[in-house]
Image 1: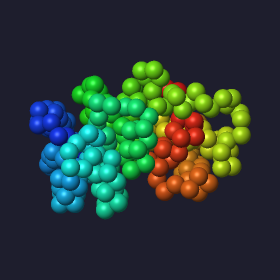
Image 2: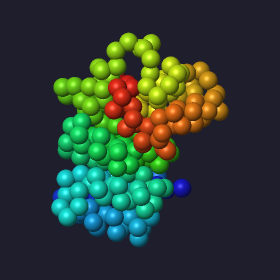
Image 3: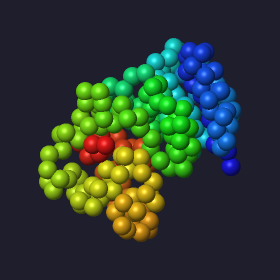
Image 4: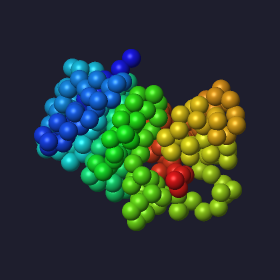
Length: 220
């Protein structure tokens, strides 16, 4: 089945360019575009997209609040931010509002297509600029505050649960986590259920936000 995408950006040339790019991806169907946050919320309710590709700096309603409203109204719709900016405050705000991924506008076409398709399958895509730079970038900044790998983790997390959380924050699927840790997917699901209960989150996007804020995100 195709991934239904709503493209949101206040610049017409950017919207049109994204539509042209995404229409070349076999699994993607662009169902609409919006030029501001209010229009995005309205169109998301009408069109029921699988993924919203969301700009942040927009008139009438910014992308963070638009993300919050869309996710509150329809949790099945995933939001991937596509922004020029990637400072800590914006990344954390977007993730706290319910965005599952965060890309910068220098992302190449292939990575963008993979992110849109991947987030519909449960992944959490992040631009390299968000993960590791420049100087040093939100995820690495959080990682630099971690200290030793065997130190006690917050909220009673075990080292294994901490490792699973790091891989979630890196955008790995359950299958990828299982392969990296040499455990079954059923065991991965068990670890995820346990760590979600301990840290008080409902989904992977909230878990990623928690990882950032507690210095548990990966370096790469």
